[in-house]
Image (cartoon, rainbow, N blue to C red; front, side):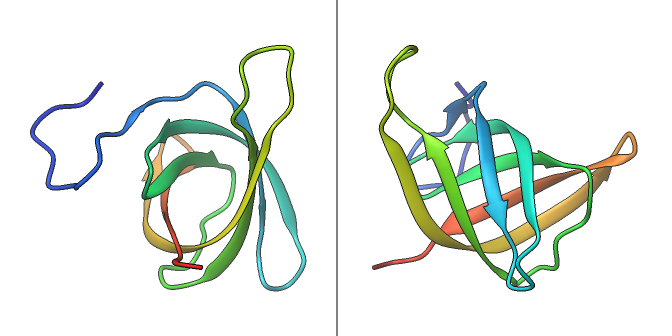
Length: 94
């Protein structure tokens, strides 16, 4: 768990895979970095534009079960990291 955050909800490490679909229909199958009630961090092979609206799907159930969270989000940051990008996506209000 991370400390010293400005977020309302704590984020925790989250070793799952997410499907992230950009407006052009391109879907990335990417490892997650962290997860909170407000958003998700992913490790992307490509840069996503800040402000871009994306669809996110990730299994939030315990191992061996399925409970897919499917939500729209906005790319809030994207930082180059060892040939990949650490991307933060904030979930949009319904």
